[in-house]
Image: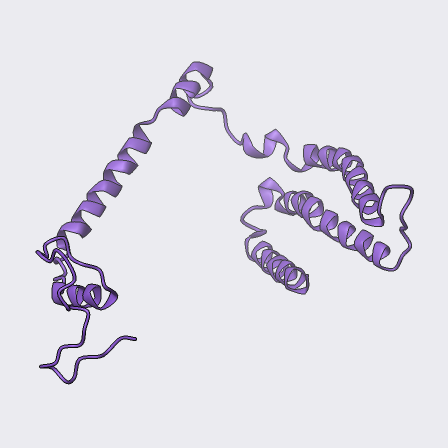
Length: 190
């Protein structure tokens, strides 16, 4: 939980730094209100849950009938979030006004709903992406040199494990699993 808290504070610090650098460039779209609208929902609901968990831990919230203290805290948190979302939605109407994003009249034909739907359903950009990925993948595969496979090492491992190769003409046990008397360095398996 401490890692989550510190990482959120760290992220929030850098978002504030980002705002400080870009606030003059974005003053027409009121970035602070948008930032507060989003962060209030995420950040404050998280800390509200932490506070309720703390109340459960300190036993200010107790079990009632078949509901555990955790169940009550979770239900209360969900209820509060439902109420808070009403106020958040009203604040979002202020923060994300259409006028902020509609700085000019759309060019001719851009307001056409059918043309917009046709553009949204157009899959040619996805097909172009796949072609580009395939071309890149093919190029990188063609540049690779085949890696030689050492079949003697695999054959020795198979023999050591008692697995016979399909190309072997052995039909039975001819003493291959016994140590070779001619080779004193051969390892004897128990």
